[in-house]
Image (cartoon, rainbow, N blue to C red; front, side, top):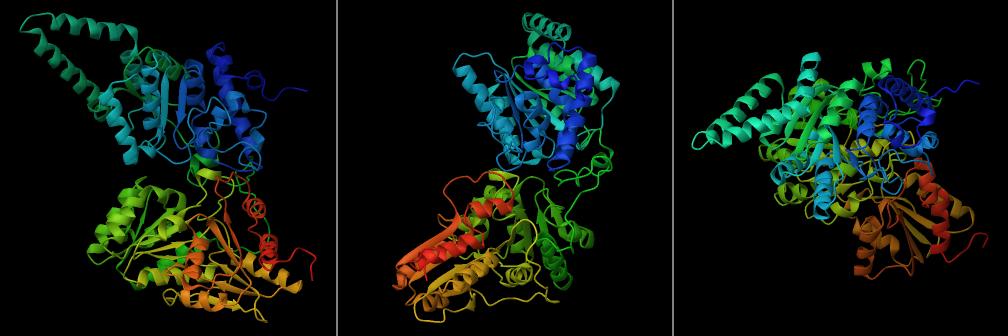
Length: 637
């Protein structure tokens, strides 16, 4: 039987690449693309970005010597070819699956993963730290930070560039420009110039001429500076690199990111430099797979798909809108009636559902790039002038803007609404993307209301509540679809700080089950299962983590024999902690308590259902906790 990947099957380690001829490297690139498509189609993943950097990955590993040389992949969406070429080829089919490879670089997974990533714009700062550590230890290894043009919009990236240029350390930054957002100057001329500008002959000539001019008394210094200015103006005319040169980097590019010959030659030249260098490489997201090339955003993170036609393969049954779609439609509905509502996203209009708002209200929509801190303070400025900004962001990325929430919004009690998508367990993206902490880091901020709706209908009402408060508010909701709750035709504001009593224990005592957020359905079924065993329980949907419905909680807890709290957030400092504080202060804390939520560790990747089952956040886990809170074991009657 013919080996489908004859070259790839020979690559067990990046050290196997330097021995390949240029034509073999080209064939290897084709095989890696086909391998990614084959292995990813049954499970899904970050497809377009990884297809776009196949040649870049091969060129980096053909020239630099990982793991001795450090290669840091920013965000990590584009690291699939890197994983395949660094000894994880045979395990690649398990990527993002429970117990399998992570979808992102992970230091504990391979020595070739120099830095763990998942959030954007960290590679330059981390790489600079590694470069300084190398110099302090007297080492000679190279450090390469790969960053995308989107990630370069974050302030952290510019902070890293600024510091790297100031320190003047040996650091290579590769700018993977896959949207041509910096410059379209790609072609034979610019590639030729970049290879010339990094070659030994040009470097020696520039150094020799500069040294000669500086040796001439009273005349050479000014002439050397003039030569430098002339060189910068010529390079600025031919390339877009002046901003990087001003930051202290030698700029190289733009290069065609799919021309392996140019990439390898340029990296070989750059490897000889001992100063900050930025190599600008232009790639095409989804390269080699026409559906992904045509719609790179749709194929950025994709579920299972048919590699022959590119169509997604989904489960059957009637469609149920996702929480993101419910948020999208509710926000547009509210904005049609209230012209003060504006929407802000940090480079995620499609992911957060704001693409429809952008279409309907283009003048009231703002994409600030990967700049969550700026998004929050920008919203605060809008709020001071009478607008109601809605900042839609993934829970895990919102962590970056904590100080701005405290100082710029809450302290001034400005009516900014934070819509926190992907709260709780996100599934296959794993610990870098789980929204595990937002309830904990938001509930202690004064004057900030925190809502966690239980289903789709509650979400639209929670959003209507948040925009009507005239004060800071956060609404959190998970990834994926809800139970299919029917939607009321009109979102309505809910009473502030009031929850819902869904059932009461039929006899004195019993167990109080207090739930917040979309774990309510699991709590409801768990209470029913415990009830079938003769255990009486009250079920309370808090709706709010802050302000907490203290009156209802105290009334339900008085005389209860046990308490179970359920949340999809870290137990430490979360909803359960708030309930304990309330009941302890009022002297009605039941004797047996079980707090269900995310443990004091980073939860690995797997499907949402698998993770909830493992963590006891499914119906069976709630029923078990109710038994324990009632002093029973399974089978006791």
